[in-house]
Amino acid sequence: MTDIYVPIDYSDLKSVIPPGEDIIYSTLSQVNIRKFSAHEKWNSHVLLTKNHFAYTEPIKRKSPQSNILPLYELWLFAPNTIFITKLFAFRFVRDTNETKENFKIRSKEFGLKFLPYLLEAKKDRLKEMEADPGKFSENKVRKMKSQISTVEKALQKNIRKFG
Image (cartoon, rainbow, N blue to C red; front, side):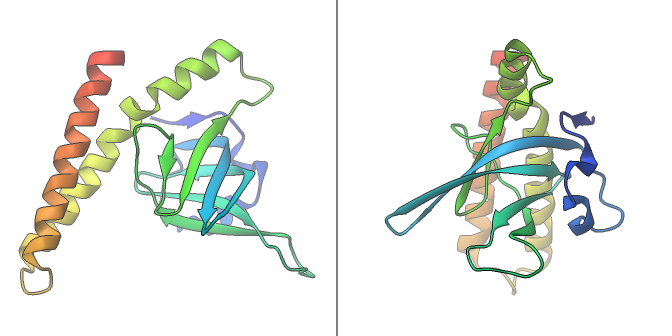
């Protein structure tokens, strides 16, 4: 599955994706972050692979080279956002070439398309953890099993709703 709503070369984000990682989603997104009592937001081009995503973060200081920093991180999913990291929440931004109706459908179906990737990644991580029990505490393994259960429930809910 490939969902390209903004050209992959819309920005230079592609440069932070490691060789061999397939880009399966390209979109614009509003990034929201809460740091202490401050709230910041900005728009970014976003590229997703099966387990990671690339986005840009503004650099507050003056830089002779660039005013944005491209980043590449593991992605997660939360029901009330499009996707998240530990600190950031992302919400899609509609491109001018996309109709409002198509944008609404795409936003709703995102979980149905990407929860299977997240579930697979978490199951793979659990296998790694169980293969090396001395490296991971029982609490971390139990937490991963709980996360897998949560993702499975969210996937089933999305299947009932949109599948």
